Image (cartoon, rainbow, N blue to C red; front, side):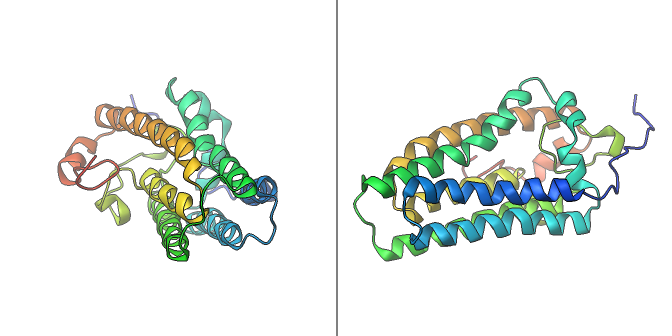
Length: 239
């Protein structure tokens, strides 16, 4: 039975505290990279910092402008309680795997010179991939008013299938964008050793995507028809 209760987070503006927490997080991630790298003149790290901050904060600002209340919905603790049991583990695990292990290893690699220096063109190509990936992920957040931090059907908000924007290309563009950025990080930050945490992050993302997609096919009306129009979950022609 569908509940007629109005979601109290609908149209609720994010508090200054929530914005502060988001800004702190997107400054803290590149700060960890610079600290472990031990080099505040590392220009590739600074460009990475700008890209992750602009996509993370800029994307959320634009999403909130388009869908008022989306940031509060994503931050509400009730959403975690209503999440699928497996996603209570995979959601934070994926968020962590896409950031901290990668920047820590990349920083240490830069500090101790484990990886031979790449060509400047590889650095530039890597930065382009990061920019494209994070932009694609931000576009998904801006496009989908039901973009949540956990896997659950938002019946109280009239959850429906989003099939516009990047969702015309793959079914999980938020994940796809973040994964596209991963090889870019390896190249831009000159670290072969980051391949280890990148592979771990990829495995976690594929597992979560599979479980989430199966859930949506079973529980979200219209999603099975959507899968007939958009065939791939993450990578066109592959998966």
